Length: 250
Image (tube, rainbow, N blue to C red; front, side, top):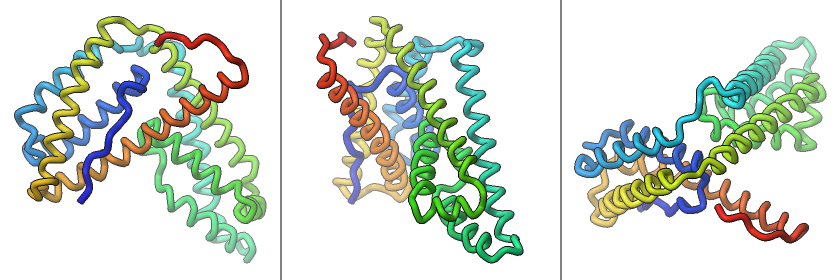
């Protein structure tokens, strides 16, 4: 039986925290609070999330927000171009190109349509896709299809996108206020109460298929965020070892 895993809420930046809670909210509404037996606690969660959102609103016309949207459109187009090139090469009259197209298409099929994913999920999917395409055996196929430069372009666009997201997250972190902290401290126990209620259903063996599906989906998101936090903490530790400085108070 699968339980909802723990997540490092305290280590999250404000924007990450809000994004995670928003994804929890979407998952609850997808399954419905009634199906998850959360009717009694969900209104408090939704209200707390709405108040947190109000404290973190970013000017939709800001340059950084526009840049993020523009780079995202660019990487989507490059991914589409690559995907279409691979599919069209399946009809090539050159046997070697058909063989390479089949090999690369299997990799694209593994990740599906990344354009439909959330920002964080798409970034991770593209990173993994590029890593697979750059493997020596697959790089040869990419060379046969003439897409080496396109793969490099997608890789750079994804790095640029992640850099902009990190920059905006840092901007938000620097705007920390007592109100944001108070709202996070109010919302986190409500989330933990939801987790306890869901996990209790598993313990009592009364979890429905809808609840089990909710747990699986949420655990995938928790895994992603925990890995992101762990990687960031690792980079910070490495930087401190290279250039020891006094730690900043967050």
